[in-house]
Length: 77
Image (cartoon, rainbow, N blue to C red; front, side, top):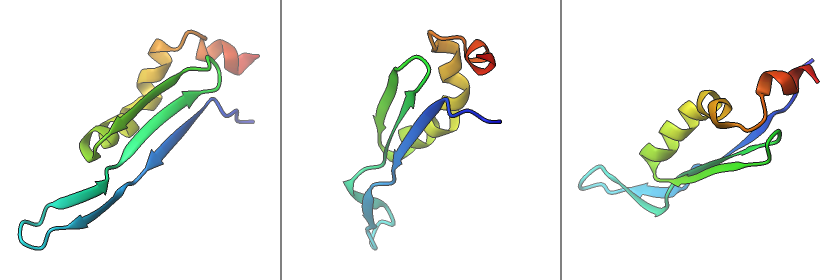
């Protein structure tokens, strides 16, 4: 049985590639936030393509170290 412990929200943004430079021009940059259902805290939002990618890659391992509720104890309950 699995339990939902948090929700990760990712907005991929809206951008178009500049044909001259090859860079993306963001009308709405990507952003991400995490909401923990155990300790009822929110981390983020972070904005920007690089920041959102780093945040998404790391939040599942970094949040439990800051969570005020012991994740392992909450799983057992």
